[in-house]
Structure formats: structure tokens, C-alpha cells
Amino acid sequence: MLKELTVYAMVYNLVRLVMLEAAKRQRVPVEQISFIDAVRWLADAAHGIRPLLLRLVPYRPGRFEPRVVKRRPKNYYRLTRPRVALRNFLLRKHDAA
Image 1 (cartoon, one colour):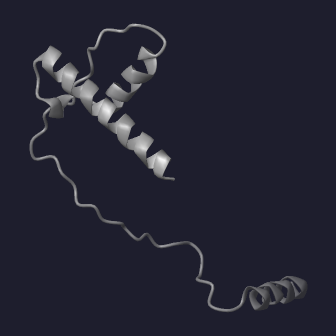
Image 2 (cartoon, helix red, strand yellow):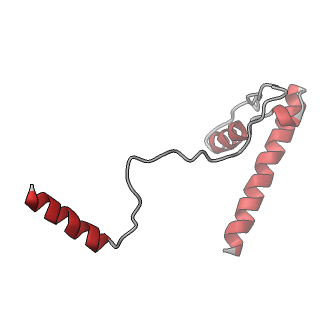
Image 3 (tube, helix red, strand yellow):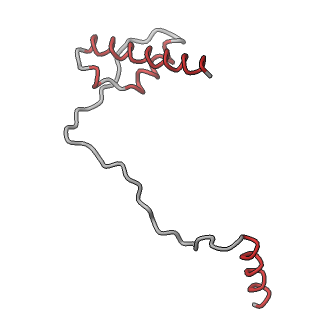
């Protein structure tokens, strides 16, 4: 488990270094470099040489959304009795019909 976490930390730092180098080469702030594009560049770099030119994240001031969960009504009732009792009720109801 510790080895796994160490490898994840190393890869994360490697991706951040790639982002930093790309930001220097493209003369943009590092916050504008796409993390996912840096990960993809690293994956492709193992197979061949590709220029370090990464996608930029557009600057969008004032863009933020509250992180909330919206509870939507369900089409089904809640399970308020034991499942066996409800199953038997449905069987009796079906047999009566």
C-alpha cells in the first residue's frame, strides 16, 4: 500500500513537472495548462517523441458552481417493511387478481 501511494505521488509530481515545462515553453501561466493533456502526453512520450505543446485551459473568471446534491423524487415507495412481508403481499395481490 505504501509503495502504491509512493508511485502515485511520484507520477503526480512528474505530471506537474511536465506542466511546468510546457508552461515555460508556451509562455503561459502553469494554471492554464491542462492536467489531463499532460498525463496523455506522458503516456504517448513512452512510445515516441512528441513536441511538448499542451492544451490550454481557457480563462473564465467568475465560473464557479455550488457543490450540492439535489434530491429528486423517486417513482417507488420506500422499503418500510421486511422484504419477505412485501413479497408475500404482492403474491397475494397477484393471486387475487
